[in-house]
Image (cartoon, rainbow, N blue to C red):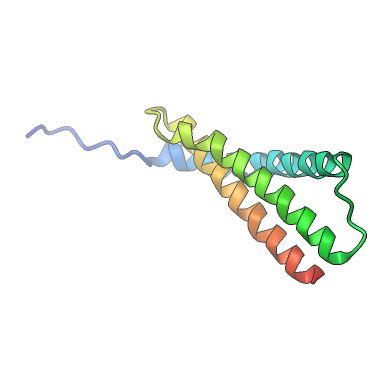
Length: 109
C-alpha cells in the first residue's frame, strides 16, 4: 500500500468550476432553446393555440437539453478537474432549464 492519499474524481476544484460555470452555461442552454424555437418556427411549426405552443416549447426544450448533455458527457471522463467541472455545470444548467420549461408548459395547459 502507498501512503499517498486517493485523489477523488470530484474534488474541490471540480465543484468550484461546476458551481461558477453553471450561471454562464445556463445562458448558453437558453440560447440553444431560442435557436431551436426559431428553427421550429422557420420550418413551419406554428403555435396558434396554447396546446401547440406547449408542444413547440417541449420540442425545443428537448433539443436544447439533448445538445447540452451530448456536449457534457465526453468531458466527464477526462482527468482534468476543470473540464469535469464544466461538464457538471453544463448538465446542471440543462436540468434546471428542463425543470423550468416543464413548469411553464404545465402552466400553459
